[in-house]
Image (tube, rainbow, N blue to C red; front, side, top):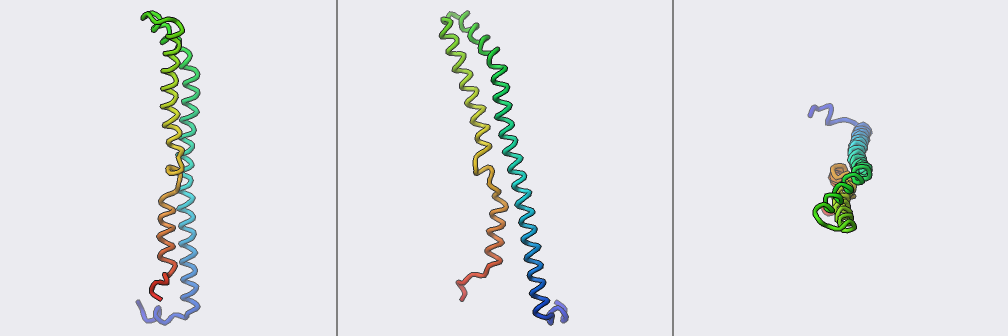
Length: 133
């Protein structure tokens, strides 16, 4: 450190400290915004997957379930039992798609973990502890 930097007035040091702290806060807010935007994008993907799953299941299930019921009838099952078996298959497929869509929307997946950990770390460094007093 140069001699002139060591003898800077207190007001200048205080102003520099406030400016650096202000820049730190702005950077942390920018990071939080970026991370929240990424989490919102992940949530949008999960919602889109749920919507796509619902649309595809409605359209395709009608045809596939009728074909499955007809095939089971040809194998020797009665008509109502064939329809029931086809319905159970549809429920299982729908449950799997719904499960994976909802799994993407859990609070753990949507929490901005990096921002919270950096904020916590920054807070610990910025605020002096009273343990040494």
